[in-house]
Structures are given as structure tokens and as C-alpha cells.
Length: 118
Image (cartoon, rainbow, N blue to C red; front, top):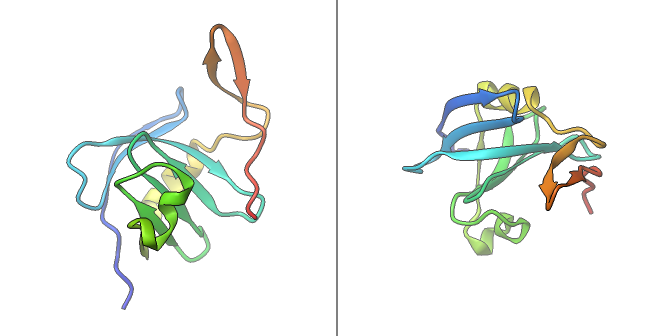
């Protein structure tokens, strides 16, 4: 049986394009930047955690103890589970699209170039 991932959505910030939520047993919320890959999967990356979700099935991998892509490996502590539809819809509301500004470094804008799966 597949584990249902517990997600507590605290805020959907459409201005900053972030979802503030707690995944699993997190005590502190994380602010997730959301990207959709060329294969249609959703990547939500925070300062302490990361997840990748197939929006058609709700299945995904997540790790609340690391926020880099290697942390999505089960050997690095990633877990597999089914995410609630409410969380998936919240993530899609704030999706960062290619060409949008992610932020600024020393006054210069940083543009999102897209996300590709290999």
C-alpha cells in the first residue's frame, strides 16, 4: 500500500510565487519554488526540502532532510508517497514559467530557463 503524504498548506503566495507548507512531520514550514519539467512533473524546492510529483497520479518522491536533487534518491532518505490533490493544485497556481524572473543577484535579474528531466 502506498503512503499518503500529509501536507499542511499554510499560504499560497501568488505575488512571490511560493507555496508555504509543511510536508510529512516537518515542524517548521518551508517556502516552495515550483517548476514544471518538460515531461510534465512538478518540482517543488524549498530551503530544507524537495519533492517531485506526477500531477496525473499524485505519486511522488520527497525528502524533508535535504533540498537538492540528489536528495530525491531513496539512498539519501527520500520517501515515496501520494500527495493530496489540494497541494498539487496549489503548486500549479504558482508555477514559475520559463522567462520569468526568479530573483536578483547584486541587482541583476535571474531568469528561469526551464526544467528538463534526464
